[in-house]
Length: 191
Image (cartoon, rainbow, N blue to C red; front, side):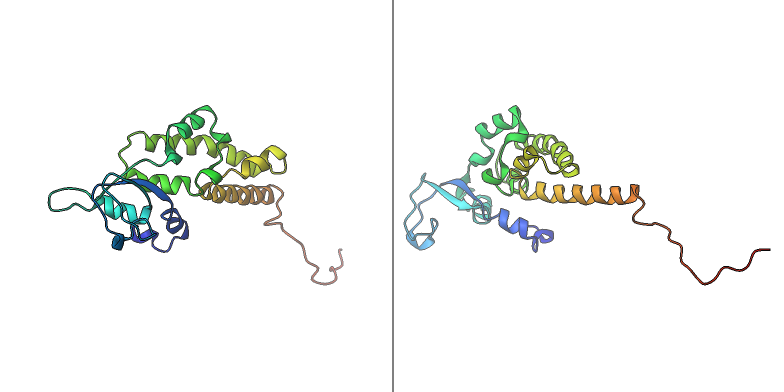
C-alpha cells in the first residue's frame, strides 16, 4: 500500500479481497498460510488476501525463487471480460467485486496480464456515460436496477454527478445568487 493510500478506507478494504495463489514451497502449519493452522504442500492452490499475497509473491529467496505465484482472480477472468465486451452496463460489479477498479489497479503490478489495464479502462469509460446519464435523471426503475450494480468508485462518481446536476439547476434558476431588494424605510417624495 502506498503512503497516500494509508488512510484510504476503500484501499484498505480492496486489499482484503482474496486472490488465488499457488504455493511454490512446502509450508508448515506454524506458517498458518490458510488461516486454519494446516500444512500447505508445494504446488497446492490457496487463496490469500491481496495484502498478504503481494509481499509473498514479490519476495525472492537467495536462489532467486518466489514463495508463491499469483493467478488472475475470476473477477477479471475470461467470462467477466466477455460479459464486459457484450454489455458493460449489465455486469453487476457490486456482486462481482465491490472495489472492482481499485482492486484491478492494484493487480496490474502483481499479475502478468497485458490486457487487464485495457479491460479496466474500457469498462470504466463505457459505464461512466451511463452513470452520468442516470445521475441527471433519477427515478426510473431501469435506473434503480443499474445503480444496484455499481462498485464503490462508481457510486462516488454517481453522487458527484448528482451534486453537479443540482448545482447546475440552482445556477440556471438563479437560486444561488438571486439579488433581493430590501426595504430601508419610506421612499423620499418625488418632485
